[in-house]
Length: 305
Image (cartoon, rainbow, N blue to C red; front, top):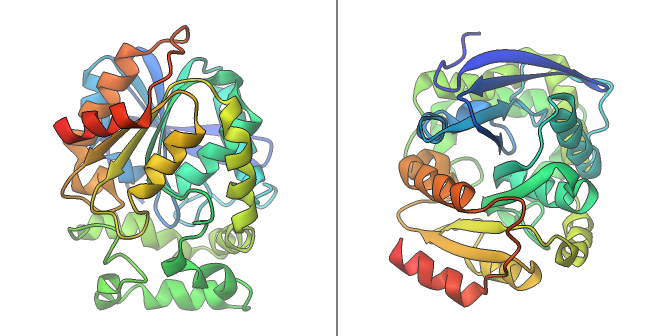
Protein backbone atom coordinates (compact mmCIF):
# COMPACT_ATOMS: atom_id res chain seq x y z
CA UNK A 1 0.00 0.00 0.00
CA UNK A 2 1.38 3.40 -1.01
CA UNK A 3 2.17 5.76 1.87
CA UNK A 4 2.29 9.52 1.96
CA UNK A 5 5.54 11.16 0.91
CA UNK A 6 4.92 14.09 3.26
CA UNK A 7 6.66 12.20 6.07
CA UNK A 8 9.84 11.64 4.06
CA UNK A 9 11.66 8.48 3.02
CA UNK A 10 10.29 5.19 4.33
CA UNK A 11 12.74 2.82 6.00
CA UNK A 12 12.75 -0.26 8.20
CA UNK A 13 14.17 -0.69 11.69
CA UNK A 14 14.80 -4.33 12.55
CA UNK A 15 14.19 -4.56 16.28
CA UNK A 16 14.28 -7.57 18.60
CA UNK A 17 10.49 -8.02 18.44
CA UNK A 18 10.17 -7.48 14.69
CA UNK A 19 10.49 -4.87 11.98
CA UNK A 20 9.13 -1.35 12.46
CA UNK A 21 8.59 0.87 9.44
CA UNK A 22 9.37 4.54 9.89
CA UNK A 23 9.60 7.69 7.83
CA UNK A 24 12.59 10.02 7.97
CA UNK A 25 12.53 13.64 6.80
CA UNK A 26 14.80 16.62 7.32
CA UNK A 27 18.11 17.25 9.03
CA UNK A 28 19.01 18.56 12.45
CA UNK A 29 18.07 17.68 16.02
CA UNK A 30 15.82 14.59 16.10
CA UNK A 31 12.08 14.83 16.72
CA UNK A 32 10.24 11.50 17.02
CA UNK A 33 6.46 11.47 16.53
CA UNK A 34 4.45 8.88 18.48
CA UNK A 35 0.90 8.09 17.32
CA UNK A 36 -1.89 6.31 19.14
CA UNK A 37 -4.34 3.47 18.74
CA UNK A 38 -5.71 2.41 15.32
CA UNK A 39 -3.70 5.05 13.47
CA UNK A 40 -0.14 5.09 12.19
CA UNK A 41 2.59 7.58 11.30
CA UNK A 42 0.33 9.13 8.66
CA UNK A 43 -1.38 10.96 11.53
CA UNK A 44 1.59 13.36 11.43
CA UNK A 45 1.50 14.01 7.65
CA UNK A 46 0.34 17.63 8.12
CA UNK A 47 2.76 18.42 10.97
CA UNK A 48 6.10 16.92 9.89
CA UNK A 49 6.69 19.12 6.79
CA UNK A 50 6.60 22.32 8.86
CA UNK A 51 8.79 20.90 11.64
CA UNK A 52 11.33 19.55 9.13
CA UNK A 53 11.37 22.89 7.30
CA UNK A 54 12.28 24.57 10.60
CA UNK A 55 15.53 22.58 10.75
CA UNK A 56 14.69 19.34 12.54
CA UNK A 57 15.06 15.67 11.59
CA UNK A 58 11.57 14.18 11.86
CA UNK A 59 11.18 10.44 12.44
CA UNK A 60 7.69 8.91 12.38
CA UNK A 61 7.48 5.19 13.24
CA UNK A 62 4.51 2.93 12.57
CA UNK A 63 4.06 1.44 16.01
CA UNK A 64 2.14 -1.86 16.46
CA UNK A 65 -1.09 -0.29 17.67
CA UNK A 66 -3.39 -1.74 15.01
CA UNK A 67 -2.66 0.29 11.87
CA UNK A 68 0.87 -0.97 11.19
CA UNK A 69 1.64 -2.90 8.02
CA UNK A 70 4.22 -5.36 9.36
CA UNK A 71 3.12 -7.67 12.21
CA UNK A 72 5.47 -8.07 15.18
CA UNK A 73 4.48 -11.45 16.63
CA UNK A 74 7.58 -11.65 18.84
CA UNK A 75 7.13 -8.22 20.41
CA UNK A 76 5.93 -7.84 23.97
CA UNK A 77 2.95 -5.51 23.59
CA UNK A 78 1.99 -4.71 27.14
CA UNK A 79 2.17 -0.95 27.82
CA UNK A 80 5.63 -1.42 29.32
CA UNK A 81 6.60 -3.62 26.38
CA UNK A 82 5.44 -0.97 23.91
CA UNK A 83 7.49 1.65 25.77
CA UNK A 84 10.50 -0.66 25.64
CA UNK A 85 9.98 -1.11 21.90
CA UNK A 86 9.95 2.66 21.40
CA UNK A 87 13.11 2.97 23.49
CA UNK A 88 14.74 0.27 21.39
CA UNK A 89 13.80 2.21 18.26
CA UNK A 90 15.63 5.28 19.61
CA UNK A 91 18.64 3.12 20.49
CA UNK A 92 18.62 1.33 17.12
CA UNK A 93 18.90 4.67 15.30
CA UNK A 94 21.39 5.97 17.90
CA UNK A 95 19.18 8.99 18.59
CA UNK A 96 20.14 11.22 21.51
CA UNK A 97 18.64 14.31 23.11
CA UNK A 98 15.40 13.45 21.32
CA UNK A 99 12.25 15.54 21.33
CA UNK A 100 9.31 13.14 21.63
CA UNK A 101 5.94 14.37 20.35
CA UNK A 102 3.08 12.07 21.32
CA UNK A 103 -0.69 12.09 20.87
CA UNK A 104 -3.56 9.99 22.21
CA UNK A 105 -2.47 6.48 23.29
CA UNK A 106 1.03 7.34 22.15
CA UNK A 107 1.17 9.80 25.03
CA UNK A 108 0.48 7.00 27.50
CA UNK A 109 3.31 4.90 26.10
CA UNK A 110 5.58 7.94 26.14
CA UNK A 111 4.85 8.62 29.81
CA UNK A 112 5.82 5.04 30.61
CA UNK A 113 8.99 5.45 28.54
CA UNK A 114 9.80 8.62 30.49
CA UNK A 115 9.88 6.53 33.69
CA UNK A 116 11.68 3.49 32.22
CA UNK A 117 14.08 4.84 29.58
CA UNK A 118 14.68 8.59 29.99
CA UNK A 119 18.33 8.48 28.96
CA UNK A 120 17.89 9.33 25.25
CA UNK A 121 15.04 11.80 25.76
CA UNK A 122 15.80 15.50 25.83
CA UNK A 123 12.27 16.90 26.02
CA UNK A 124 8.68 15.79 25.51
CA UNK A 125 5.52 17.21 23.97
CA UNK A 126 2.38 15.44 25.17
CA UNK A 127 -0.47 16.49 22.89
CA UNK A 128 -3.93 15.59 24.27
CA UNK A 129 -3.40 12.06 25.54
CA UNK A 130 -4.20 9.44 28.16
CA UNK A 131 -3.18 10.31 31.71
CA UNK A 132 -3.66 8.95 35.22
CA UNK A 133 -6.78 6.75 35.40
CA UNK A 134 -7.82 7.58 31.83
CA UNK A 135 -6.18 4.53 30.20
CA UNK A 136 -8.17 3.74 28.23
CA UNK A 137 -10.52 6.73 28.45
CA UNK A 138 -14.05 5.94 29.55
CA UNK A 139 -15.57 6.22 26.07
CA UNK A 140 -13.19 3.53 24.76
CA UNK A 141 -13.18 1.28 27.82
CA UNK A 142 -15.04 -1.31 25.78
CA UNK A 143 -11.99 -2.03 23.59
CA UNK A 144 -9.93 -4.12 26.08
CA UNK A 145 -13.09 -6.07 26.90
CA UNK A 146 -13.87 -6.57 23.22
CA UNK A 147 -10.33 -7.84 22.63
CA UNK A 148 -11.00 -10.78 24.95
CA UNK A 149 -13.59 -12.20 22.53
CA UNK A 150 -12.30 -14.53 19.79
CA UNK A 151 -12.71 -13.02 16.34
CA UNK A 152 -13.69 -9.61 17.69
CA UNK A 153 -10.86 -7.74 15.96
CA UNK A 154 -11.97 -9.05 12.56
CA UNK A 155 -15.58 -8.05 13.25
CA UNK A 156 -14.49 -4.58 14.36
CA UNK A 157 -12.31 -4.13 11.29
CA UNK A 158 -15.15 -5.12 8.96
CA UNK A 159 -17.63 -2.88 10.78
CA UNK A 160 -15.35 0.12 10.38
CA UNK A 161 -15.47 -0.29 6.61
CA UNK A 162 -18.85 1.43 6.78
CA UNK A 163 -18.28 5.18 6.77
CA UNK A 164 -21.35 5.96 8.87
CA UNK A 165 -19.69 4.21 11.82
CA UNK A 166 -16.94 6.85 11.81
CA UNK A 167 -19.42 9.45 13.03
CA UNK A 168 -20.15 7.60 16.27
CA UNK A 169 -18.74 8.91 19.58
CA UNK A 170 -17.17 5.48 20.20
CA UNK A 171 -15.14 5.75 16.97
CA UNK A 172 -13.95 9.07 15.47
CA UNK A 173 -16.75 11.55 16.18
CA UNK A 174 -15.12 13.14 19.23
CA UNK A 175 -11.55 12.45 18.12
CA UNK A 176 -11.43 14.95 15.26
CA UNK A 177 -13.64 17.79 14.14
CA UNK A 178 -13.12 16.97 10.49
CA UNK A 179 -13.32 13.85 8.35
CA UNK A 180 -10.40 11.83 7.10
CA UNK A 181 -9.98 11.54 3.35
CA UNK A 182 -10.33 8.09 1.78
CA UNK A 183 -6.57 7.56 1.43
CA UNK A 184 -5.94 8.27 5.10
CA UNK A 185 -8.84 6.11 6.26
CA UNK A 186 -7.48 3.22 4.22
CA UNK A 187 -4.02 3.77 5.70
CA UNK A 188 -5.43 3.65 9.23
CA UNK A 189 -8.04 0.90 8.93
CA UNK A 190 -6.81 -1.22 6.03
CA UNK A 191 -4.03 -3.14 7.85
CA UNK A 192 -6.35 -4.53 10.54
CA UNK A 193 -8.88 -5.56 7.91
CA UNK A 194 -6.33 -7.31 5.70
CA UNK A 195 -3.84 -8.90 8.10
CA UNK A 196 -4.51 -11.55 10.73
CA UNK A 197 -1.06 -10.80 12.18
CA UNK A 198 -1.89 -7.13 12.65
CA UNK A 199 -5.19 -8.08 14.29
CA UNK A 200 -3.31 -10.39 16.66
CA UNK A 201 -0.91 -7.57 17.59
CA UNK A 202 -3.83 -5.20 18.19
CA UNK A 203 -5.59 -7.74 20.36
CA UNK A 204 -2.47 -8.26 22.50
CA UNK A 205 -1.98 -4.53 22.90
CA UNK A 206 -5.60 -3.86 23.85
CA UNK A 207 -5.71 -6.67 26.38
CA UNK A 208 -2.81 -5.05 28.22
CA UNK A 209 -4.40 -1.62 28.61
CA UNK A 210 -5.12 -1.12 32.32
CA UNK A 211 -5.35 1.96 34.51
CA UNK A 212 -2.64 0.76 36.84
CA UNK A 213 0.05 1.23 34.19
CA UNK A 214 -0.44 4.98 33.91
CA UNK A 215 -1.20 5.44 37.59
CA UNK A 216 2.14 3.80 38.35
CA UNK A 217 3.85 6.00 35.79
CA UNK A 218 2.26 9.10 37.34
CA UNK A 219 3.81 8.17 40.68
CA UNK A 220 7.25 8.04 39.03
CA UNK A 221 6.97 11.07 36.71
CA UNK A 222 8.24 13.55 39.36
CA UNK A 223 11.69 12.05 38.75
CA UNK A 224 11.57 13.21 35.10
CA UNK A 225 13.01 16.73 35.33
CA UNK A 226 13.50 17.42 31.62
CA UNK A 227 11.27 19.95 29.85
CA UNK A 228 7.74 18.83 29.05
CA UNK A 229 5.15 20.73 27.04
CA UNK A 230 1.52 19.76 27.52
CA UNK A 231 -0.08 20.92 24.26
CA UNK A 232 -3.76 20.27 24.83
CA UNK A 233 -6.91 20.75 22.81
CA UNK A 234 -9.01 23.08 24.93
CA UNK A 235 -12.21 21.47 23.57
CA UNK A 236 -11.06 17.86 23.99
CA UNK A 237 -14.01 15.66 24.99
CA UNK A 238 -11.97 12.50 25.54
CA UNK A 239 -9.05 13.90 27.52
CA UNK A 240 -10.24 17.02 29.40
CA UNK A 241 -7.78 19.89 29.53
CA UNK A 242 -7.85 19.57 33.32
CA UNK A 243 -5.69 16.46 32.83
CA UNK A 244 -2.95 18.65 31.37
CA UNK A 245 -2.86 20.77 34.51
CA UNK A 246 -2.87 17.65 36.68
CA UNK A 247 0.18 16.41 34.78
CA UNK A 248 1.83 19.82 35.09
CA UNK A 249 1.40 19.49 38.84
CA UNK A 250 3.24 16.16 38.83
CA UNK A 251 6.07 16.97 36.43
CA UNK A 252 8.77 19.27 37.85
CA UNK A 253 9.56 21.05 34.56
CA UNK A 254 6.30 21.34 32.63
CA UNK A 255 4.15 23.97 30.99
CA UNK A 256 0.70 23.91 29.42
CA UNK A 257 -0.37 25.42 26.13
CA UNK A 258 -4.04 25.18 25.20
CA UNK A 259 -4.88 24.97 21.51
CA UNK A 260 -8.44 25.97 20.54
CA UNK A 261 -10.77 24.60 17.87
CA UNK A 262 -9.61 20.99 18.09
CA UNK A 263 -10.54 17.65 19.55
CA UNK A 264 -8.01 14.97 20.54
CA UNK A 265 -6.33 14.68 17.14
CA UNK A 266 -4.48 17.98 17.19
CA UNK A 267 -2.29 16.77 14.28
CA UNK A 268 -5.47 16.57 12.20
CA UNK A 269 -7.49 19.55 13.45
CA UNK A 270 -4.70 22.08 14.13
CA UNK A 271 -1.53 20.78 12.43
CA UNK A 272 0.06 24.15 11.68
CA UNK A 273 -0.55 25.43 15.20
CA UNK A 274 0.83 22.22 16.71
CA UNK A 275 3.89 22.39 14.47
CA UNK A 276 4.52 25.99 15.56
CA UNK A 277 4.28 25.00 19.21
CA UNK A 278 6.63 22.02 18.74
CA UNK A 279 9.22 24.08 16.84
CA UNK A 280 9.21 26.88 19.39
CA UNK A 281 9.47 24.47 22.33
CA UNK A 282 12.17 22.23 20.81
CA UNK A 283 14.13 25.25 19.63
CA UNK A 284 14.33 27.02 22.97
CA UNK A 285 15.25 24.00 25.07
CA UNK A 286 18.44 22.00 25.06
CA UNK A 287 19.73 19.20 27.24
CA UNK A 288 21.11 21.67 29.79
CA UNK A 289 17.81 23.52 30.30
CA UNK A 290 16.12 22.27 33.43
CA UNK A 291 14.37 25.37 34.70
CA UNK A 292 10.92 24.52 36.11
CA UNK A 293 7.83 26.20 34.74
CA UNK A 294 4.69 26.41 36.81
CA UNK A 295 1.37 25.35 35.36
CA UNK A 296 -0.03 28.86 35.85
CA UNK A 297 2.64 30.22 33.53
CA UNK A 298 1.65 27.54 31.07
CA UNK A 299 -1.97 28.58 31.26
CA UNK A 300 -0.97 32.15 30.49
CA UNK A 301 0.97 30.93 27.47
CA UNK A 302 -2.08 28.95 26.39
CA UNK A 303 -4.25 32.03 26.70
CA UNK A 304 -1.91 33.85 24.31
CA UNK A 305 -1.81 30.95 21.82
